Image 1 (spheres, helix red, strand yellow):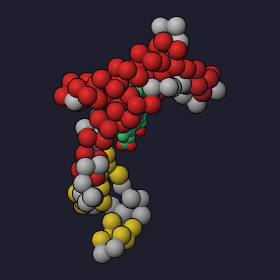
Image 2 (cartoon, helix red, strand yellow):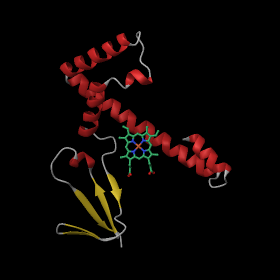
Image 3 (cartoon, protein in one colour):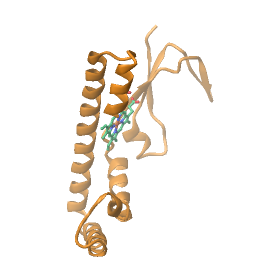
Length: 140
Ligand code: HEM
């Protein structure tokens, strides 16, 4: 990614300050979300010892098949752990809401989402119930 940004700067489409701002975004987006995801995965595994044991067995098996090592390709074989991480992210999303502006008027059933609305979408609610919850802010 950094290589792409530097290549763009050599074509004069990005300044050093632009690159710095992009790197700041990756650093923030990258550390906060993954730290929260890891934390909730570990907390849930601590709470559910039977699941933790299945994860442990899967890791032991994959490591045995790979001379006691975990590398990028053997990590792809930890499918049970991957499902546990995804379930932790569903229950406790690291980014628990996002905002969108529809850009143009959109009618969904009886609701009109005007182009000047900001739509809050709460993943934490949509991932955990069958109802979609959102808040509309009139920013006209
Ligand atoms: C569990 C891990 C992660 C989760 C749950 C996650 C979630 C998200 C979500 C939901 C968005 C969209 C926000 C929006 O459109 O309003 C987003 C954007 C983004 N994420 Fe992640 N992310 C994760 C890890 C990472 C990592 C590791 C990086 C970089 C190293 C990263 C870089 C970004 C960037 C650059 C954006 C775009 C920000 C922008 O549009 O200004 N994310 N992420």
